[in-house]
Length: 229
Image (cartoon, rainbow, N blue to C red; front, side, top):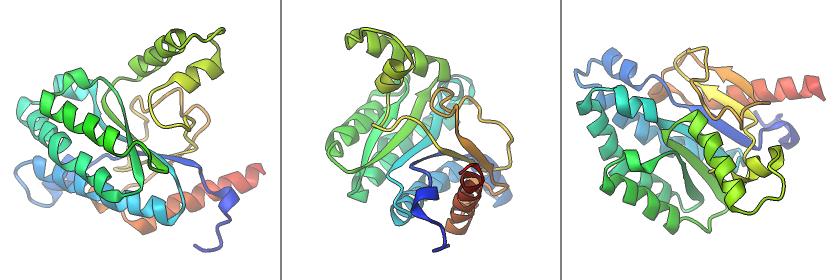
């Protein structure tokens, strides 16, 4: 893997962390929440891999607004617990990553929303940037960017103004999207920011996704970029 040239690596990686419930079922757990726990724990590994590969901008799909509205209440409550207790502390412990949340936190219970906001405040000055899609709606994300551009006094509401005003870290455009679990779709994952992204689909379920799989996705991206170059 050392043969990968830094100029061929993505600046910003997006990860659709899919397959947690299927992983729990495959592992013999009656409660799909065990899969969500394992998936949340795996985020710490992802942050470490990005640090090792000097990738400073990462976006992950955690929980959509549709899932909050449509999943069984028991599953949603378990996810809310992860958002209140596990994921914010994972980012805070990292000592390197600044947390940004893109989505509607009003859909979350107060303790989960405040835990995420507190983690955003505590990590604000860090050099690397993690955007988590939570209570996320793809159309709402773009609408929010337009609203912010107008509120910020943009003299012309063009592509650049909207991009700059979108929620998330300072680098908006996502270069590589990795989706686990074999699904061949983006499921509304940051449509504005991924308009030029390369997509790599892994058959692995998210908790089974390894650093070797991550490195393979980077290799695929680098190979495609070298052909373009």
